[in-house]
Each structure stands twice: as C-alpha cells, then as structure tokens.
Image (cartoon, rainbow, N blue to C red; front, side, top):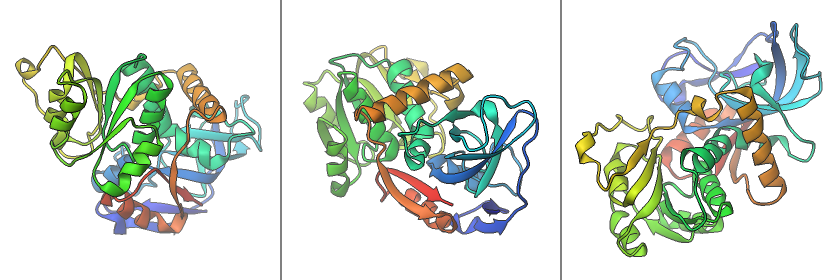
Length: 321
C-alpha cells in the first residue's frame, strides 16, 4: 500500500510517498481501506516535533473514513464492507490503516465518506467545546478566532444552532465572506490584538461570554481582555508557539480559562458514538455544513501542509488516497 512517511522531522518536504506492507489487524482491530483522510494543524506539529508515539519513521494523520476490509479476532461490532470513520488513530495518511475497532464509528448510508472524515477531529472538538466545555446558551455572545477555518466554521454553526451570537475573527478580507456564510453575526479583520477594541465596541463595552482561541500565545492575553465578568476562554493553540504563562492574579473580572484536551472530548466509547451521531444528525438536518475547503490526492500531502501553514486556506482539507 502507499502511505506518506516522515523519516526525519522538519518541513513539508519530509512528507514522502512510500510503499509499505499491507497491515494485518490483530485482536480487537480492523483494517480499513481509506477513502478520505483529514489534514489538521496538529499534523504539521507532528511533522516538525514528532508524533505522540515518539517513533521515527511514522505515518502522520489521525482521522479519516473508509470501508472495513479485514477483521481481527474478537471483533463483533463491524463486518467486512462496513463504512466507518475514526479519529486519533495515527497512520491515516495512507491507503489502508489498522486501528482498534473501539475507535471507529459507523457511518450512516446518507453521509458521504469525505463528509464523515471532515467531521471527526474538528467536528467532535467543536461539538465538545460548544455543548460541554462552554455550554453556550441562547443569547450568549462568543468570539471565534480563525472563523473562516474548518474548526472556526463548525464552531460558528454550532453556536448559532444553540441560539448564540458570533463575532468571527479573520486575518484577511478574502476570508470575511466565508465567516459570514458560516453564520457569523459580525466579522472583524484582525491580526494579533487588533480585535480587542472592535469586539468591545460591538458589545457596548461589556465583552463576550466566551472566546474560542486557537491562535496561540499572540492572541491569548487579548482574548482575556474581551471577556465579560465570569467569561470563559477556551484556549487550544498549543501547537502555535509556547503555551502562555499566566499569574493567577492577572486574571481580570473573575474569568475562567479552559485548556480542553481532545481525549477529554471523548473519554469513553459512548461519548465518541454520541458526539459523532449528533454531528451526523446536524449535517442531515442542514444545521451543519462540513465546510470542505480542498481535496488533495495522497501524494500531494506536502502541498496540503504548505497550504494549511500559510493560513491562506478556508475550510477543511482532505487527502483522498
């Protein structure tokens, strides 16, 4: 099978197409023929800094969708031919993958593979952020950074579906329309901390109930400054520079800060099935557009990484083996 392999850490040029043996599933595992794999910013961090496994070489990518082609012993939940999707299984930049059956979810007949793949990382993240970590309520106002990106568009749509209002932050005028189409009530063009004054003006000086900030430490303190009393900052920009260091006495207006780790989104299989089923329902009912921005052939993984790191892309990026 063909796969993208990282043999040395570094830039996108370290993503090489290689021929690897067909993987065989062990006990409790399934093999899947991959039809779509998601490209995430965390993949660029793995390429530069190393995968969570710590091993070299490795096949990057942690989410995708496809069709089951082999079962390991003791697998009873799936059959050969079933369509499945998954998240946080390294090795997804490939034509095939072996993963624990417990990490896969069934894909409904009316949900295309590329849509299912586009939802697993960013969709589950956004769903957890909006329904549990922040628990957005009707009438609340939230700031969404990178509102034209794949995660930003999903956050915006889910906040709107719960009756909230969104101030979307984008880095350029060409992204403003994308953020508005996703449902943002207001769009602010900003880099760094330039969004603070416009956001405070839009809220009559009161600030917002929540900020969803994946911009890294360059926006962290500015995001704190636009929160109202007891507001919540969800920070998830760990791959973008060093994590901010904050003296607790610096926190203004009794605000709260959350660093939501992906494994806390889906601590159990039941949570995985619930989040994914809810997302499929939202797509089915046209309350969530998966927002696929671009599809690349597998051999163009390096270009996909260049594009996502350039900040010039909008929507979800996918590799199609």
